[in-house]
Length: 233
Ligand code: DX5
Ligand code: ZN
Image 1: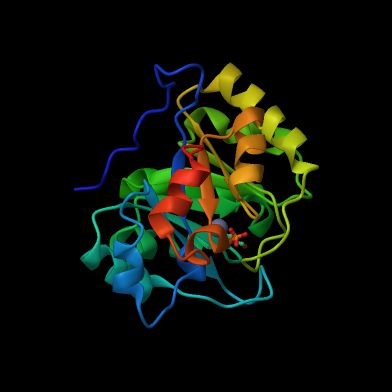
Image 2: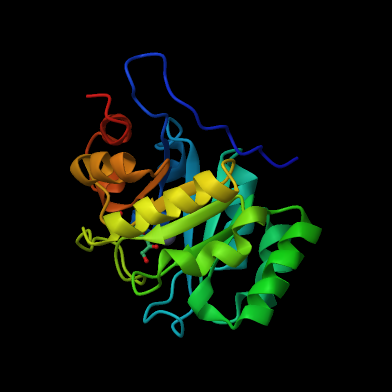
């Protein structure tokens, strides 16, 4: 049974938006994934960065690792595919236990994006589209009504630990407008260089799911780091 996408909304306290925290296991110790999964249980999702050495100049993990993670956690598994022609692997990642797949608009032409989304629908996996910093918010408009999530990159995809790109705040705000207009149930996720300070900026711009690798796993107090990203301390 796949986890449902938890709803958004606002807390009763003041005007604090409800944000979901999605730690990226890219910054975990791959020999200690069970320990590092348990360490993030106070977060909402687990974010898995899949890289193929073609779409991005780095290689990380793939289908067998997603399958193993699924066997060890009930957390919502948010799989970010930084791979060329991702439609080729949608069914495999869905079968391995991904709850949501994000494909990059830049990784395939429109017919293949269409095919990837159709396959996600037939596999029962949530549908996400990711945008590199170079891609304009409006590029997502043809698909937005059917999406569960739009992922706006705030670094150039490929590596953890990079510096947040403040110019992407404008893209986040524009995607927020498109979501509010065409599909208010769609979530807006931001990925790259997120720490307590940039978290506040992206939430103010309209983000509601925050991916964080180094800000979580680089901390000696992982639950504290997750709470700090929520703006709780
Ligand atoms: C980058 C990945 C990110 C990365 C985030 O290509 O998509 O998910 O792990 O790492 P930090 O939070 O360290 O920027
Ligand atoms: Zn990512």
